[in-house]
Image 1 (cartoon, one colour):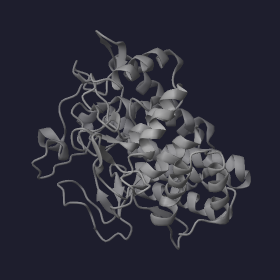
Image 2: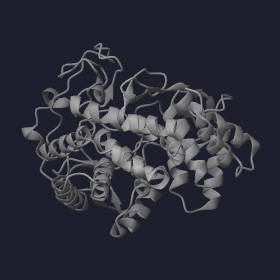
Image 3: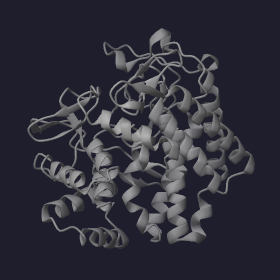
Length: 418
């Protein structure tokens, strides 16, 4: 789709505050990426947003991809597109709340045939807590944008389909507090341990914590320990956010109760004592005394915790965690000749992610750190003027995914904070 008059005006308004011409040019290209190359509005009024070089829609990716356009929600064409994505995601959740990515045409097109309950619209059925959390995040963000720019339209988001989706999410997260009662399994014939779940597709043993279980990380890699702390923190945030939306009071009450339970579980099992950094957040735990200290570049991440409202009592824990994450004690933190930052086991060693650099900048309180990150971003596009997934800290010309619209949107979101 071509950028609308409202989006062009918004882009130029943002660019007017950018002094660096190189950054300004990258911003223009990144701003248009999702709208011009991945967005389609369907005949039924819904919108489908592919991730880029894979023609499927991830709930997580699509939610983040459209955030730069929220300030143009008062324009009719933009509003219909944003509203349509909320509607489409609600349909997807109601088709299968365990799925993380969907195809457009219901033709059984998928990434791989897996030993799980695939349906005609399912691209992949790796269950990730954050997929559902990001649908609620999108709902809340678009609702807030509507209240600001077109308040008479905000009520169009909370349809019976949407309330059904909210109910589905609450039911699933409650079920997965006790995964032993869950119907979900996932097996894939792969040599990579990260592509399938152990224990005949059910994952490693866990104990009850009050948190909700996740099969896979936001990177689509299998969790090692299945209580994923950053995803549970995002879940708490969006459940609290539901209190501000005009959904049925019963849904709000259930969401509030569940948020309290997840938060208590994070407090008890998700914070560990580190001999060097003090109390920090673990990345994963199993409720049986085991945990992993790391971070992954994808959102939700431990580094990105402050992107949602942070519990005041956790501010020091986050500060300690941040110091750990941006050090060589984090096994996925890399430094090289051109850049330094957080990567992922999903991509090669010594590759860091543009998304993680943007998150680091957006959560930093230090202007010097923000400028350093901006300099790294603008000099690691490999001449494309666009962001990528991961790139080699010693040679940015080596990178993964040349068409990854979410990373482009993240660049815009970071620059908007400067």
